[in-house]
Image (cartoon, rainbow, N blue to C red; front, side):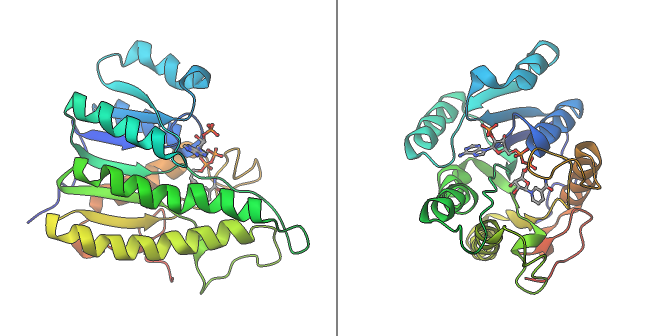
Length: 239
Ligand code: NDP
Protein backbone atom coordinates (compact mmCIF):
# COMPACT_ATOMS: atom_id res chain seq x y z
CA UNK A 1 0.00 0.00 0.00
CA UNK A 2 1.33 3.47 -0.92
CA UNK A 3 1.61 6.24 1.60
CA UNK A 4 0.17 9.60 0.79
CA UNK A 5 3.22 11.41 -0.61
CA UNK A 6 2.04 14.99 -0.29
CA UNK A 7 0.25 16.47 2.69
CA UNK A 8 -2.38 18.75 1.11
CA UNK A 9 -6.03 19.05 2.12
CA UNK A 10 -5.23 16.77 5.01
CA UNK A 11 -5.75 16.82 8.75
CA UNK A 12 -2.65 17.57 10.79
CA UNK A 13 -2.18 17.68 14.58
CA UNK A 14 0.84 19.42 16.13
CA UNK A 15 1.82 19.56 19.81
CA UNK A 16 3.70 22.52 21.32
CA UNK A 17 2.20 24.64 18.54
CA UNK A 18 2.19 28.11 20.13
CA UNK A 19 5.83 29.04 19.44
CA UNK A 20 9.08 27.89 17.87
CA UNK A 21 9.06 24.99 15.44
CA UNK A 22 5.51 23.95 16.36
CA UNK A 23 4.16 27.35 15.32
CA UNK A 24 6.28 27.15 12.15
CA UNK A 25 4.66 23.79 11.27
CA UNK A 26 1.19 25.25 11.93
CA UNK A 27 1.79 28.19 9.57
CA UNK A 28 3.18 25.91 6.86
CA UNK A 29 0.33 23.40 6.91
CA UNK A 30 -2.33 26.13 7.05
CA UNK A 31 -0.79 27.83 3.98
CA UNK A 32 -1.03 24.48 2.17
CA UNK A 33 -4.81 24.20 2.74
CA UNK A 34 -4.82 21.64 5.48
CA UNK A 35 -6.95 21.47 8.58
CA UNK A 36 -4.63 21.96 11.54
CA UNK A 37 -5.28 21.06 15.16
CA UNK A 38 -2.73 23.20 16.99
CA UNK A 39 -2.20 22.06 20.57
CA UNK A 40 -0.82 24.36 23.24
CA UNK A 41 -0.65 24.33 27.02
CA UNK A 42 -2.44 27.63 27.57
CA UNK A 43 -4.75 28.91 24.87
CA UNK A 44 -5.10 32.33 26.52
CA UNK A 45 -1.36 32.95 26.09
CA UNK A 46 -1.07 31.58 22.56
CA UNK A 47 -1.20 35.05 20.98
CA UNK A 48 0.32 34.12 17.62
CA UNK A 49 -2.00 31.14 17.21
CA UNK A 50 -5.04 33.24 18.10
CA UNK A 51 -3.95 35.87 15.55
CA UNK A 52 -3.88 33.16 12.86
CA UNK A 53 -7.52 32.32 13.61
CA UNK A 54 -8.79 35.43 11.78
CA UNK A 55 -7.27 34.30 8.46
CA UNK A 56 -7.88 30.58 8.94
CA UNK A 57 -11.17 30.41 10.83
CA UNK A 58 -12.30 27.36 8.79
CA UNK A 59 -9.21 25.22 9.14
CA UNK A 60 -7.40 26.12 12.35
CA UNK A 61 -8.54 24.45 15.55
CA UNK A 62 -6.67 25.49 18.70
CA UNK A 63 -6.76 22.88 21.44
CA UNK A 64 -5.37 22.75 24.96
CA UNK A 65 -2.84 20.01 25.67
CA UNK A 66 -0.18 19.53 28.33
CA UNK A 67 1.57 16.34 27.25
CA UNK A 68 2.79 15.66 30.79
CA UNK A 69 -0.72 15.71 32.22
CA UNK A 70 -2.95 12.62 31.90
CA UNK A 71 -6.21 14.52 32.43
CA UNK A 72 -5.26 17.04 29.76
CA UNK A 73 -4.57 14.22 27.26
CA UNK A 74 -7.80 12.37 28.10
CA UNK A 75 -9.84 15.56 27.76
CA UNK A 76 -8.33 16.29 24.33
CA UNK A 77 -9.09 12.75 23.16
CA UNK A 78 -12.73 13.19 24.26
CA UNK A 79 -13.02 16.46 22.36
CA UNK A 80 -11.46 14.92 19.23
CA UNK A 81 -13.98 12.06 19.36
CA UNK A 82 -16.80 14.61 19.31
CA UNK A 83 -15.21 16.33 16.29
CA UNK A 84 -14.90 12.96 14.56
CA UNK A 85 -11.53 13.93 13.07
CA UNK A 86 -8.93 11.48 11.74
CA UNK A 87 -5.40 12.62 11.00
CA UNK A 88 -3.03 12.15 8.07
CA UNK A 89 -0.14 13.53 10.10
CA UNK A 90 0.61 13.92 13.80
CA UNK A 91 3.75 15.79 14.90
CA UNK A 92 4.89 15.19 18.47
CA UNK A 93 6.86 18.43 18.66
CA UNK A 94 6.45 19.66 22.27
CA UNK A 95 9.69 19.51 24.18
CA UNK A 96 11.66 21.02 27.05
CA UNK A 97 15.35 21.47 27.70
CA UNK A 98 16.38 21.88 31.34
CA UNK A 99 20.07 22.64 31.56
CA UNK A 100 21.91 21.03 34.50
CA UNK A 101 25.50 19.80 34.47
CA UNK A 102 27.46 17.31 36.58
CA UNK A 103 27.26 18.69 40.10
CA UNK A 104 23.84 20.37 39.56
CA UNK A 105 21.85 17.35 38.36
CA UNK A 106 18.54 17.02 40.15
CA UNK A 107 15.90 14.33 40.19
CA UNK A 108 13.38 17.05 39.42
CA UNK A 109 15.29 18.20 36.33
CA UNK A 110 15.54 14.66 34.93
CA UNK A 111 11.91 13.88 35.79
CA UNK A 112 10.51 17.04 34.19
CA UNK A 113 12.55 16.48 31.05
CA UNK A 114 11.48 12.85 30.68
CA UNK A 115 7.86 13.65 31.53
CA UNK A 116 7.60 15.86 28.45
CA UNK A 117 10.17 14.64 25.93
CA UNK A 118 9.81 10.89 26.45
CA UNK A 119 6.80 9.86 28.53
CA UNK A 120 4.79 12.76 27.13
CA UNK A 121 5.36 11.53 23.58
CA UNK A 122 4.87 7.84 24.45
CA UNK A 123 1.63 8.30 26.35
CA UNK A 124 0.23 10.90 23.97
CA UNK A 125 1.03 8.55 21.06
CA UNK A 126 -0.84 5.80 22.88
CA UNK A 127 -3.83 8.11 23.36
CA UNK A 128 -3.84 9.50 19.82
CA UNK A 129 -2.71 6.69 17.48
CA UNK A 130 -6.25 5.48 16.85
CA UNK A 131 -6.99 8.90 15.37
CA UNK A 132 -4.36 8.33 12.67
CA UNK A 133 -5.70 7.28 9.29
CA UNK A 134 -4.43 4.09 7.69
CA UNK A 135 -1.28 5.16 5.80
CA UNK A 136 -0.82 8.25 8.01
CA UNK A 137 2.42 9.57 9.46
CA UNK A 138 3.56 9.98 13.07
CA UNK A 139 6.59 12.24 13.51
CA UNK A 140 8.46 12.41 16.80
CA UNK A 141 10.67 15.50 16.90
CA UNK A 142 13.94 14.22 18.30
CA UNK A 143 17.42 15.74 18.31
CA UNK A 144 20.93 14.88 17.17
CA UNK A 145 21.69 15.19 20.90
CA UNK A 146 19.84 11.87 21.29
CA UNK A 147 22.37 9.99 19.17
CA UNK A 148 24.63 7.80 21.33
CA UNK A 149 26.96 7.32 18.35
CA UNK A 150 27.40 11.07 17.69
CA UNK A 151 27.47 11.97 21.41
CA UNK A 152 27.36 15.68 20.51
CA UNK A 153 28.91 18.19 22.89
CA UNK A 154 29.18 15.90 25.96
CA UNK A 155 30.57 18.73 28.11
CA UNK A 156 27.34 20.75 27.78
CA UNK A 157 24.69 20.78 30.51
CA UNK A 158 22.29 18.88 28.25
CA UNK A 159 22.51 15.43 29.81
CA UNK A 160 18.86 14.96 30.77
CA UNK A 161 17.80 16.36 27.40
CA UNK A 162 20.13 14.05 25.44
CA UNK A 163 19.01 11.03 27.48
CA UNK A 164 15.33 11.89 26.98
CA UNK A 165 15.78 12.09 23.20
CA UNK A 166 17.81 8.84 23.06
CA UNK A 167 14.94 7.17 24.92
CA UNK A 168 12.48 8.80 22.51
CA UNK A 169 14.47 7.29 19.63
CA UNK A 170 14.16 3.68 20.84
CA UNK A 171 10.50 4.33 21.65
CA UNK A 172 10.01 5.51 18.05
CA UNK A 173 11.72 2.43 16.59
CA UNK A 174 9.53 0.15 18.72
CA UNK A 175 6.28 2.02 18.07
CA UNK A 176 6.93 1.98 14.32
CA UNK A 177 6.69 -1.82 14.33
CA UNK A 178 3.42 -1.74 16.23
CA UNK A 179 1.85 0.72 13.76
CA UNK A 180 3.21 -0.92 10.58
CA UNK A 181 0.18 -3.24 10.17
CA UNK A 182 -1.88 -0.05 9.64
CA UNK A 183 0.69 1.24 7.11
CA UNK A 184 1.55 4.13 9.39
CA UNK A 185 5.03 5.63 8.97
CA UNK A 186 6.61 6.50 12.33
CA UNK A 187 9.96 8.30 12.47
CA UNK A 188 12.21 10.26 14.79
CA UNK A 189 13.10 13.53 13.06
CA UNK A 190 15.90 15.89 14.08
CA UNK A 191 15.24 19.53 13.12
CA UNK A 192 18.90 20.58 13.16
CA UNK A 193 19.94 23.55 15.31
CA UNK A 194 17.25 26.19 14.97
CA UNK A 195 16.66 29.78 16.20
CA UNK A 196 13.91 29.30 18.78
CA UNK A 197 13.67 29.96 22.52
CA UNK A 198 15.25 26.54 22.99
CA UNK A 199 17.83 26.73 20.18
CA UNK A 200 18.94 30.31 20.92
CA UNK A 201 19.80 33.17 18.60
CA UNK A 202 23.18 31.78 17.57
CA UNK A 203 21.61 28.75 15.89
CA UNK A 204 22.31 28.66 12.14
CA UNK A 205 18.81 27.74 10.90
CA UNK A 206 15.65 29.82 10.96
CA UNK A 207 12.29 28.30 11.92
CA UNK A 208 10.96 28.77 8.38
CA UNK A 209 14.08 27.20 6.85
CA UNK A 210 14.05 24.19 9.21
CA UNK A 211 10.29 23.67 8.77
CA UNK A 212 10.62 23.83 4.97
CA UNK A 213 13.29 21.12 5.06
CA UNK A 214 11.37 18.94 7.51
CA UNK A 215 8.06 19.09 5.61
CA UNK A 216 9.91 18.18 2.43
CA UNK A 217 11.32 15.14 4.25
CA UNK A 218 7.90 14.29 5.73
CA UNK A 219 6.22 14.56 2.31
CA UNK A 220 8.63 12.03 0.82
CA UNK A 221 8.35 9.44 3.60
CA UNK A 222 7.28 5.94 2.67
CA UNK A 223 6.89 2.76 4.70
CA UNK A 224 10.55 1.89 4.01
CA UNK A 225 11.56 4.84 6.22
CA UNK A 226 9.38 3.81 9.14
CA UNK A 227 11.33 3.29 12.35
CA UNK A 228 14.27 5.42 11.21
CA UNK A 229 16.01 8.41 12.79
CA UNK A 230 16.32 11.11 10.12
CA UNK A 231 17.83 14.57 9.84
CA UNK A 232 15.78 17.54 8.66
CA UNK A 233 16.97 16.86 5.10
CA UNK A 234 16.04 13.18 5.29
CA UNK A 235 19.50 11.68 5.86
CA UNK A 236 19.57 8.66 8.15
CA UNK A 237 21.22 9.49 11.48
CA UNK A 238 23.11 6.96 13.59
CA UNK A 239 21.34 5.87 16.78
P1 NDP B 1 10.58 26.00 22.07
O1 NDP B 1 11.14 26.03 23.46
O2 NDP B 1 10.64 27.21 21.24
O3 NDP B 1 9.05 25.49 22.12
C1 NDP B 1 8.72 24.36 22.87
C2 NDP B 1 7.24 24.11 22.71
O4 NDP B 1 6.90 22.94 23.48
C3 NDP B 1 6.37 25.26 23.26
O5 NDP B 1 5.22 25.39 22.47
C4 NDP B 1 6.01 24.76 24.64
O6 NDP B 1 4.81 25.32 25.18
C5 NDP B 1 5.81 23.28 24.33
N1 NDP B 1 5.79 22.48 25.57
C6 NDP B 1 6.71 22.41 26.55
N2 NDP B 1 6.27 21.60 27.54
C7 NDP B 1 5.05 21.17 27.16
C8 NDP B 1 4.09 20.31 27.75
N3 NDP B 1 4.27 19.76 28.95
N4 NDP B 1 2.92 20.07 27.09
C9 NDP B 1 2.71 20.64 25.88
N5 NDP B 1 3.56 21.48 25.27
C10 NDP B 1 4.73 21.72 25.90
O7 NDP B 1 11.34 24.79 21.38
P2 NDP B 1 11.58 24.42 19.84
O8 NDP B 1 10.49 24.94 18.99
O9 NDP B 1 12.98 24.76 19.53
O10 NDP B 1 11.52 22.83 19.94
C11 NDP B 1 10.51 22.03 19.33
C12 NDP B 1 11.02 20.61 19.31
O11 NDP B 1 12.23 20.54 18.56
C13 NDP B 1 11.36 20.07 20.71
O12 NDP B 1 10.96 18.73 20.81
C14 NDP B 1 12.88 20.18 20.75
O13 NDP B 1 13.46 19.27 21.64
C15 NDP B 1 13.24 19.90 19.32
N6 NDP B 1 14.57 20.37 18.92
C16 NDP B 1 14.82 21.72 18.83
C17 NDP B 1 16.08 22.14 18.44
C18 NDP B 1 16.42 23.57 18.25
O14 NDP B 1 17.59 23.88 17.90
N7 NDP B 1 15.49 24.52 18.43
C19 NDP B 1 17.17 21.17 18.15
C20 NDP B 1 16.78 19.79 18.27
C21 NDP B 1 15.52 19.43 18.65
P3 NDP B 1 4.83 26.56 26.24
O15 NDP B 1 4.92 27.81 25.39
O16 NDP B 1 3.54 26.43 26.95
O17 NDP B 1 6.04 26.39 27.10
